[in-house]
Amino acid sequence: RPYLFSNSLAPAIVGASTLSLGDVAVEIGAGLGTLTSRLLATGATVIAVERERDMCSVLRTELSPSPRFVLREENALHVDLDVISAQYGRRLVLVGNLPYQIASPLIFRFVAMRQSLRRIVIMIQREMADRVLAPPGSRNSNALGIQVQMLCAVRRVCQVGRGAFLPPPRVDSSVILLDPLPQTAVLLLDLDMFHQVVRAAFGQRRKTLRNALSAAFPD
Image (cartoon, rainbow, N blue to C red; front, side):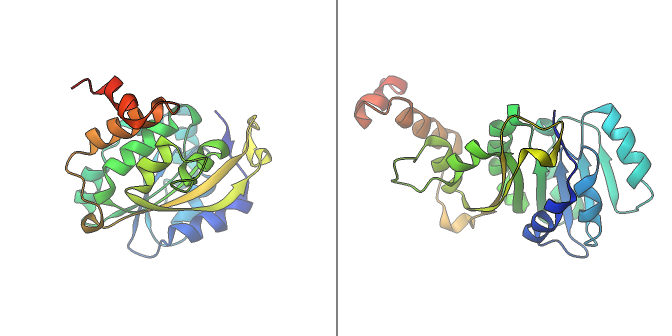
């Protein structure tokens, strides 16, 4: 797993997070703590989520003296943001360098818990970022982008070269910003069903919408 070690990206990511004194940030994949220390410098409480024991040891050594630093040694897919938000009595800012292999399920998990999130700033593979940001109705429109944009306003913060990581990955990355839309702006009674319909519609693009949907919903 590549770890972010370049400090040059921190200003853009921290700026996009709009953190200030009293805020609570959840950082997914804290790694070496390169970004964590910059997030703490805003005055916010930072809850770092990291599953690798070696990295947790580094984080404890470097950052534990800060009273606003909290380390959770667990899988990001198991973190309940609703519980953390209720614990601190405020909506959270989620920041993270998402592991490529689980980036998609993590994004859907965050979107599902969007009521507990004020802002989402994540680094993902550039190709995936392009999919999330593809405009509706364009030739590049896709299921992932439709599902995310239905619930969040999205934009790209910056591009990230391979040299920002150690070891360098084989692909470039992007930092994107997701701002959850107000509940009143999106009337979805069943989020899971919405996801199923969109995936079915885009699953067989050469077919008519009726035939594509009938493959998933025979009735």
